[in-house]
Length: 322
Image (cartoon, rainbow, N blue to C red; front, side):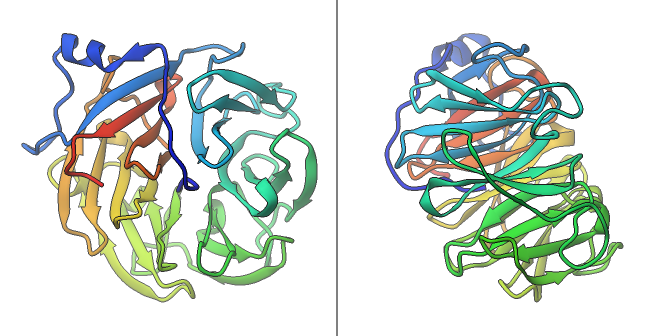
């Protein structure tokens, strides 16, 4: 996931001073924590700014707002960049509201938003004020069909949308109208194969990064789906993962990964060199409980869906991780 360009300052409910008072959350594996918690907002619930199992974040800096998918109550919530709650979209009936458990979210042309609907196995396209524009795909295993889709990302190079087709163990590529353009992948652990992948991101050059969750790695591909390299392996040390779930790439080329099983954020060069980690399992600011989605803005801040803590944490760089 990536953010559109702009400038922001977030004012939430918990400031970085709380992190300092609590002793902070150091990076794991002996690394230096190159981030601090700028703000934390949300909290368990369904009303207003409250959240329930947030899965992904899209930051639209040009429009001055951000969106959070609520995976388990079928809402999408919209906020100003200062944290002010703006709107809730969707019926919100658990396991089957209007959105049918939205998971991934990406920005499209004309300010439209593209959502993967996990249980409905479709891509839902809506306007920035929540109006339905179109729906494409359906449940199945054929070309253009989806089965429990998760992450979605739009390429800044070709404008196409890349979707993690999780239970079909593949990536499918669509244009803005929902026409299938490409697909690759199969179930397995070899290069180019997937096992219950979740997140996806695309850098400024069009390179595709996939959080291959149950293979405990990130796979890197060309825009056409040619395998380039694999990053990480299972574990809790430097450069290791337990169920990597979300990926984002900064404008400077740093790859950020939510390491859900280890309760932390880790980052690498695009070539796979381990650079650092931040966080640990817990509920305090700077701690995480199964974080899923992550977005990086133009200022290098990370917007993390701290999923089972029912909140979003915003991490600001200390200067070294951009």
